[in-house]
Length: 226
Length: 241
Image 1: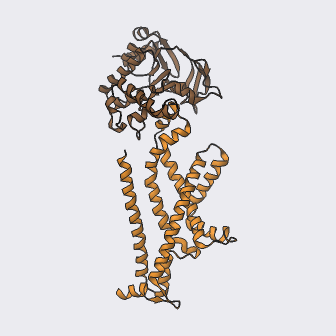
Image 2 (image 1 turned 90 degrees about the vertical axis):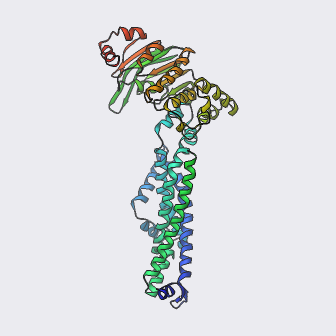
Image 3 (image 1 turned 135 degrees about the horizontal axis):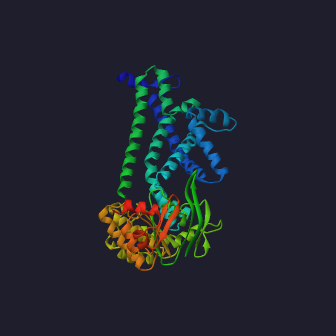
């Protein structure tokens, strides 16, 4: 056991003198960077897409609907590979940037669905009451619907971010070295299976646990304002 | 004050209103009664365009509200609506529920709206609930707040869509009392209701609807004591025991 840990994580592996733990930490950094920026890009895209979908103008809601259908209907791995090797092939884009764009695009579609569901879950009577008082559509949205929708949206949004963090584990498909890929490199060089894989799994678990914990604290605070 | 001519409303193939013509004068209190599915709520909801009529015209003080260029938000400011399910805003306090629309629409400053809210809450007997959230109120209290909220816009007409149907029986009286005093102050009111006693006491006129048309339309004593149409007699014999 101790030997396996030493071999996998703390002794140079291969001719280039790489050390396992160093690979893992670098991979973790890549995972976190991609997740963080994809989250931001996804949120912005998600809000934009929701607004476009709610529009009555076909040239706004059509593209939004197609975007969501395509993204939801194909695996994220294919989206990532197509984006990097085909769409961005002729541009000088590094792997991390490509991954951020791919996961941001992917997350945006799901986030727009989360926002839409959150808005639709608000009772129709709320809109009717606000409109019957003479409030405009926009004022109704801002003053009455969104403050209530946000409580439906935030828990699912947190969940989406956890899913996103785990889904970045396919960055290796375009040759990026994230946490998962770091584990795989160690495994292939040392022929140790358990230690690199469980190390990666534990780190993912730890990250999502922290995230879930922060979310539940946040939700409790929201509930207090009820 | 309101003139409705040949109002039709369909939901898909389902024809709910089949030609309603009616005139309601200023200060008049009109109750609309009838069995479920008779179209009485739809009729009421057409008056402030919560339902868009399929055909027909509605004029409020001579202005067509069904015209394409009609400003619906302006119209709705003059027409208060009270719903069966209250539809209070759960994330706002009682007072914020009342002040939201007048402040948002620039009709009052925050302090004007707040003192107006105090007056209205006094009027509906809920002055001590100003800073409570709707979730802490009983059904009867919620409905009285909803009435105060509608009155804050200083409407010229109030529409009530089965305001006591979702209430515990012991809460009904408080809400009806508020409506009664409103009627006595000369408010023009259209009330869809199952409270026959209330309709009889408070209304100037009662409309009996069935199957999307107005079957009978007369002053309350005549309609309740000596209904002319056989359909009205049948309905009343079932509900008045």
